[in-house]
Picture 1 (cartoon, rainbow, N blue to C red):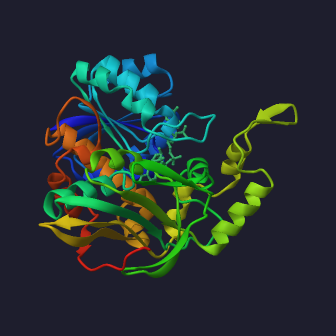
Picture 2 (picture 1 turned 90 degrees about the vertical axis):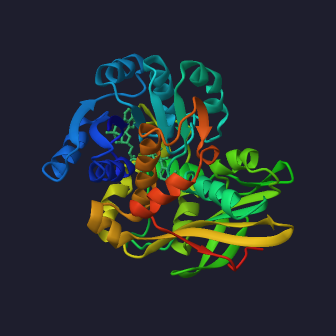
Length: 400
Ligand code: NDP
């Protein structure tokens, strides 16, 4: 059916590429392009002989808009799937505008020198994408991503009005290291060491990092400590779900992870302020990333499950209603299937599905769109087909 250009060759990209190659009828051709071409070639070699998808590779620095525009213009993909880092989002969007090509990502733009992520920068591109007649689909991972699709599905099929959403992200996987992060350490630590916040009655309520703690008994996992964080989909769901009064996001963390993180913070290792080191400027967090285990190396060691989902409360036909939609994913099963742990898997599968929605024309409409703005049904069907089946409950435990 068509072609995709995939930028990045890390943990998430590897899963998305495996999934595109399982879905060769839609992804007849893909190009894997990243700064380090050897990583792209390695992925191509792993898949050789196992797929009908034709794979090409290229070296690209996505921050070089002119070079990327040239690459898109010469390869002529139907969609560009950005699986590099959030710092590249705006540059890749610029190149897509130049080459008039659809764009998909999984994380919103973050300037490299400020640990602040919000949609403002990408939403500013709305008019230019509309005028160019192309679509930018923002946040097609799990959270953001599937959590937005779950919200649109709940609203379409189960509620007249949703008033409360609690997004619960539980990773009960054990990789056996004293401290490691499940996706890019720099991005992960910036996210969890920031202040928390939630949306209530039309405004943001800010909390200290890890200030709000709850224990939740996750289906198929059991009770876990979870902490309130700021998360990017809160911003778009607050706009796109009418009648919403409060949205919160909780993520589970174990004692050991938090103790290590606190210690690293206390000694200054999580700082993004450059320091002088032996006559060179270095950023402590980037140095920390270099000494921590590569998330891609966690795959063969991680055991246990993830459970990510949303609890909705609202009204249907004048009555109060509660609804919980979630997915449970097993780290070892993911590794057996695609050679990656569940965090990369739960992001890479929806990234492939988002690209498929645009490539097949199931989702269309020029502009810059968040995922919950589209019809959730074909995406929900694809989740069941491509490895992330969802479950529902009408009487879940609630979070106070
Ligand atoms: P990795 O660090 O494993 O991979 C990032 C890849 O991007 C690497 O291949 C790197 O190549 C490449 N890259 C970095 N800079 C550039 C550049 N300037 N030009 C071209 N390529 C570049 O990260 P992950 O796979 O763990 O994460 C990928 C994305 O997924 C991130 O944006 C992350 O925030 C997002 N994510 C989203 C989630 C969700 O649920 N929505 C959950 C988890 C992650 P090289 O190192 O060779 O330069």
